[in-house]
Image (tube, rainbow, N blue to C red; front, side):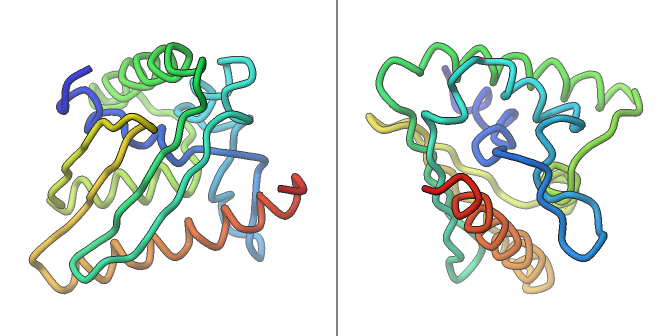
Length: 158
């Protein structure tokens, strides 16, 4: 897979879960209802064999997606399906998106820089900006993701 491919589907790397909600707001992760997340969940066993780390850095965030051995093909299939969904969204089709996907899309529209590195363990993504206001949005997105993922891990007993 090339960097352009991974950049286009990076939303996949953090999409986990069970409709986590916070005080009645839109679910941050919503595997059952989000048009993007459904693609990831469709690959049997994948969600239990991918781990994510999100870190705030000075000018954005770093995300590490660790894919268990033997699940790389399922990860790629999910990524390709998500790219097709992204293309439909870009053409103007209206779809339900979870809070994560909505926020991530807003970051992309704000003009962030996105660098993707494939490694032996999976995919590493840097999302950065030189604009302080955009960095603040990236940090808010990252912190919300960190918090929601922590809750999800606790709920599944990890």
